[in-house]
Each structure stands twice: as C-alpha cells, then as structure tokens.
Image (tube, rainbow, N blue to C red; front, top):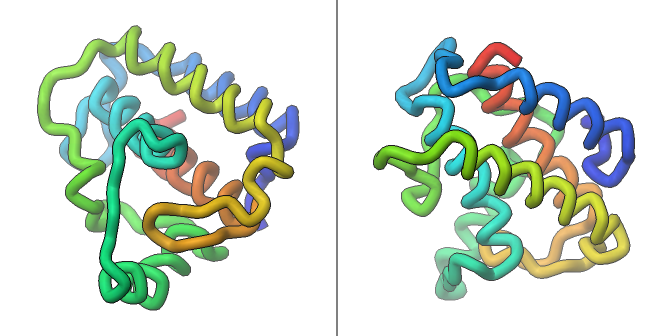
Length: 151
C-alpha cells in the first residue's frame, strides 16, 4: 500500500522531494515543464476543495466510478504518459515559485485537515470515498509526477 498522506513522515518526505525541484528541472517523460507539473498537481487540490467546480450527470459519474476510479485510487502506480482529464491539462506558462508555494500549502492543508475530514468525503468524480482512497489519490498522483521530474 502507499504511504498515508496523513502521516507526518509522508508529508516531510514529499516536501523534501518538492524542494529538490528547480525551474530548470527537466522531465524524464511527458510534455509539461516543471512549473506546469506543479500547477497540474494543484488542480487536484482545487477540485477537492471546490475551487474548481465540476459536475457530472449520473451516467458520467457511473462511468468514472466503473472505469477510472480504481486507476486513480487503487493499488497500482500510474503508468508513464497516461491520459489525463481535460480539467487537469496545463498548457500555458506558469510561475514556478508561485505554483510550488501553492502545492506546499495544498499538501499541508490536506495533512492538517486529517483523515477524519476525508473519511466519507464526496469526490466530484467518484462519489463518497474513504480516507485511504483520498490518501492514495493524492500520493499516487504527486509521486508519479515527482518521479517524472527525477525527484
């Protein structure tokens, strides 16, 4: 199983990896630059906290639960160059320092809110999820992209 995003050591480890990134860090695969990757990861937190509103009809939500949820929250790490939802695509230029600062704040917010705040919390894509599923989603996504940039 993946490290818990709610455990202090997990946050410490992730923040240390993020701290190794610089504006010049190059990807090992994919199309995003490092600032775009940070912004891309911030989209997930913006969705989680309702900053980016999304709504799906019952059929879209059913299809997401049946065909996407396990990839996002399950036990298997993401594959390189996988498809991403349109809302997560960041193609414009971004400010590295600002995106990094926002990502750190987002990670700390989830960690400080704690597992209790996420147990049974509604996902706009997948419906109610357990704290473990939320943790997997956050950790898997961020770990995938940190590995993409060699940290």
